[in-house]
Amino acid sequence: MSGITTSGEKKLKLFSGRAHPELAEEVARALDTELVPTKALDFANGEIYVRFLESARGADCFVIQSHTAPINQWIMEQLIMIDALKRASAHSITAILPFYGYARQDKKHLGREPISARLVADLLRQAGADRLMAVDLHTAQIQGFFDGPVDHLFALPMLADYVGERVDRSKLTIVSPDAGRVKVADQWCDRLGAPLAIIHKRRDMTQANTILSAEVVGDVEGRVCVLVDDMIDTAGTICAAADALFDNGAADVIVAATHGVLSGPAADRLKNSRVSEFVFTNTLPTPQQLQLDKVTTLSIAPSIAAAIKEVFEDGSVTSLFEGVH
Image (cartoon, rainbow, N blue to C red):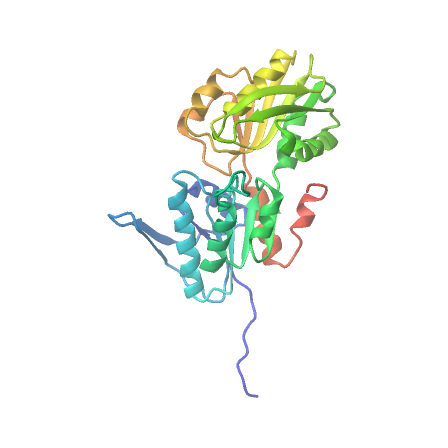
């Protein structure tokens, strides 16, 4: 008989960049595997060098890198890792982005602006990624920026269940911090059986992280309000929204967000805020100065590991998040 036969066994290999190795280690433990040993270093001029110390030939490779600060360095490192795997004859390459960098630049607000979220998707595809996996994209339309399969994971079930177990649900009101988050807030309401309120914000489109005014739409008096968002960056807008809720008679405010970006003055704002608890996931590392009693971090690693297993075994990632869109 001519030809060559093989065992046909599939191989899964998990690779991590240097941005958030703690999360990658958690994912590896959840999968009952180990990260592929990797040599990564920076040359004196800032160029990045990566070499994997095990063969990737014929393997289904998953490259996890969260785009934390310094964000441009870690995006570039992930691109270099993907390129190395492509040239090492990997069978498939999935780029895992617990936090997708530049996701807020998903459309043009003013003339002569870039759509940087699309550019990041194009770079990943060009580097050699066959598939993307991301947690709570800033907008669902980003899935269409990548020319290939995109697995969109959600932290809502974990965050909502955590809050629901700690607070009397009869006193809960879910609050959307702006019109763009109403759909997500609605899903929180359905899961926890709570009413909805909305913060109507007027933004200064020429200034980042700046709002001109905040008005509460809905009854929040005497209620425990849960402000839900996908990310908290400098914490200025979310703290202003919390103040508006307290000014309208809220008994307490909890903030729940998937991504704790927590840049610049965020540490001082969280410390000085009247919010009783900030709940994040560990899609991004928590800065040392923000490891406060009022900051709770939940692990997203089990969800990522479960999605990796479904992809590797040709299962259904969608089935992991039934009822969440």
